[in-house]
Length: 193
Image (cartoon, rainbow, N blue to C red; front, top):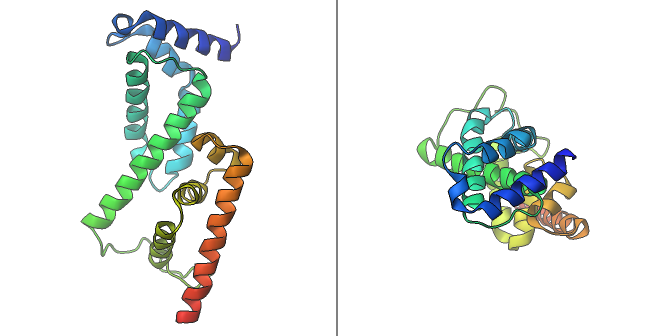
């Protein structure tokens, strides 16, 4: 039995077993998480990157909790590999977003990290660029904003499509429209200065 089929079989047996089989320390749950730990860790590390590596254990815990709740609810996980990957990405993005917002609220005038005072190719400092991108995302439609945010976090077109349940062409369209809006607003910003 292949690894993928074992995961499907395992997920199916967990959902058929109901809540009683999912007690704390469940071997079945542990095996499911263990089999896909590398996939989950890779997705989380990709979103968090080096800068936010301290958040990785918290994100992993949240992903495990989300999986536990899903299995305990009795809902069937049709494709465990893609489901775990999607949960890992969305959880990591949500936690990272909350962390960055909290960081900005707690310390709005934080000293820049070494080397961050160098202007970007567009002539903006990193803080200005982040503020500009945030303002641009607020002006976009919800799908374009979600797609662009995920793309700027380092996800590929395929990963964005998988994450939001879109076809690859829809993901690409939303990303390109978002980037076009970003460029257009960047040009008007330069003209205003």
